[in-house]
Length: 394
Image (cartoon, rainbow, N blue to C red):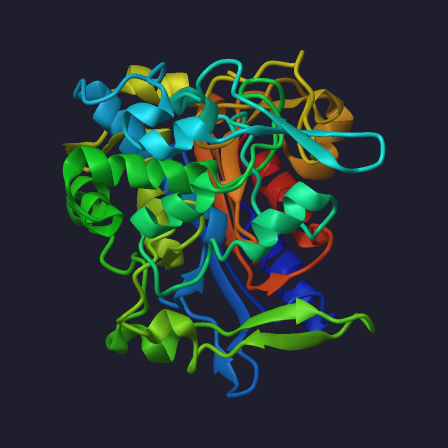
């Protein structure tokens, strides 16, 4: 087994809990064919003093997006879609969406799409779609926020009708803007397969990989293991955002299966998905994707010549975007020491501060689970990744 300083990682994570930087966390590092580190610290449910364990169930939010993207790439391998296909081929009403142009006085005018939005545009968040989760920063963002795109009682088909009545924020292909795009991909998969997104994921990924703890709701047998979610209040303390024992995730009647952010999972379950991607699309003898497809997903397809309308990735961060996740396109000694973000890594995060990355050049991956909303990325993200990289680099 490769050498790994387990004590150093234990100290890093336990200290974060002791200092009150996080309530609870679990983490896993895989290197050279072996799980070289697992650790659990603190509480998953502070109010009931329930400790984090290896089978704690987490909201992974946008770590759902790489899973949905894998479904789309799998359908592509089977010849059921092309990345160049217009989205309107599968969801005609989205082809009629107008593009908003903001006037100097803040009043929008509207024009048709200069070219059709494509499946590749959705994969790369360059579709022009908004999201509705970043506040009413302009009239278009406000319209997305009010549209009810996340209500649990409506399925993806209904959500597409709501979405079609909104404008695009810019012409498809013009920029990168984190968006509802991957939820649209989930609906495209449903249209092609004639099944719900959950059924498709079960069939193509979760059942073959043995990911029995991952899905769009929390089963009764998972309830006691489901974390509560928190947020950082103005005074810096953690306040309860959603009680795990009364959560909407427990309602079996929920119909919204969000390809962009709806899954729950455990550390061990998501590690199976990560290992499949690290090993070129196969896990313990079951192939989900061809290796060339995985390599394609982990390349920067957005490029550095288009604007990134959010500051998380882009030329200033030496990163771009592939299919399903961000791609580190360069590094420096300073960047590696600060964050462990090395050239060639691919991955993404979730709104409640879960993070994973795949480091194929160094034959490693890492996952850290947290459960709180915050305005800024917590320091533990960079610290975990930097220490894991230092221990797993070739």
